[in-house]
Image 1 (cartoon, helix red, strand yellow):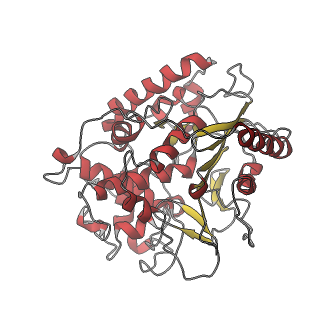
Image 2 (image 1 turned 90 degrees about the vertical axis):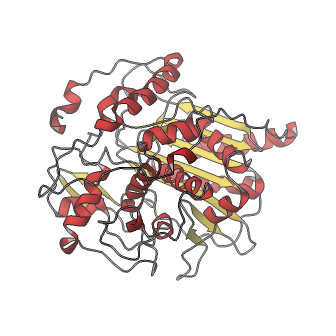
Amino acid sequence: MSGIKSFFNRVKFTPITSGSLTYIACLSAIIVTITGLSACGSASVDSQEQPQLKAVPGTLSAIPAPVLLDLPAPTPIAPALKQRLHDGCEAWYNMRLRNSGFNGGMLVAKNGNIIFEQYKGMAHIGGKDVITENTPFQIASVSKTFTAMAVLKLYQDSLIKLDDQFSKYFPQFNYPGVTIKDMLSHRSGLPNYLYFLEDIHWDETKFATNEDVLSLMISHKNALKDVTNPNTHFEYCNTNYALLALLVEKVTGKRFPQYMQETFFTPLHMTNTFIFNPDSMATANRSYDYRGRIEKDMYLDKVYGDKDVYTTPRDLLTWDRALTTGIIFKPETITLAYTPYSNERRGIRNYGLGWRMFVFPSGKKIIYHNGWWHGSNASFIRMVQDSATIIILGNKYNRNIYHAKELAGLFGNYGGKREEEEENEAAEPGRTVVRRRIVRRRRHK
């Protein structure tokens, strides 16, 4: 693999018409599958042998072949209600996004019905590829919702237990007591790979992989900072989800992008959804800072599980409906995902298994996740009890996207004092690369 500095100099982007995007997104899934086995070619440190990805005996037969799934038809809503909700969403869009440099897509749904949908800008700023309902965006940490549900699918199929220690599947993992549940709920006490790769002087001209993250944690444990005892407190950590992607691979014997394609994306007809691979960059939109300047690639881009899902607002609505209709997951599994697990501090903010949430005194919840990677940011908000969904994705950084929860009041009583969310709460990771060094933006709570 050539150096990162020259990587994008070799890539030529041709404007893509909306009609060809679905084909390209599907083709990318095939490319990801074919190239997946060679995706770990990053250099190792101290000649440490990479952990081997061999399936746990007896598990492969338990993974069913892809079956296409059809969601039930949305529940009709009254025309007057639909118009009222549409007008409220349109007013918010005009106030928050329309004139703020927004470059992306917004979709709001009630009972599975799209009540407001708006797209603005170009997939490649300066190009002619207008953003449409078929334009996929990097959803950054919203990707964690897919990784978490993949792990919960393995649990539901009795292939793993949530109380299993991670070392059961990777015996060389020398962080005792860390369970799968601890990692899903960000209570593992593990260090964040976005920080420690810099601290141990990773060669920034080479893409790091998930296997690299695991190997370095094992071989450099004594040098790593911010390692604490598991299940003592909440600490948002991208390492958890990079390792959980490896767990999926170990248990299934399939590369994570392939498993996700076969288990979720293809069965649910999510034809514009795929997991990013820098080796096939032409399938993905570039991202831009708030001034419209292109964000360069960097050595962390190849690690998946914590990020790197590309999708559209409509495909995310399909994902939302798949989670609420019982077509894949049992109610007990969904309950586990939406249970708050970090209760050391008082307040309405909490985290489940792959989902952030507001838990109100009334018993209502807002189940959501935000994301930020390079210039792409995303907000995926679900008022499950009111069957409402808000989705905003963009590839040009826009902080107003994170104000999307202001729309919750259109659908129900989500009153009470809502704790002020950090502007960059979704800016996972909480640092950004600036001139080859990583600096903190704002520490997550």
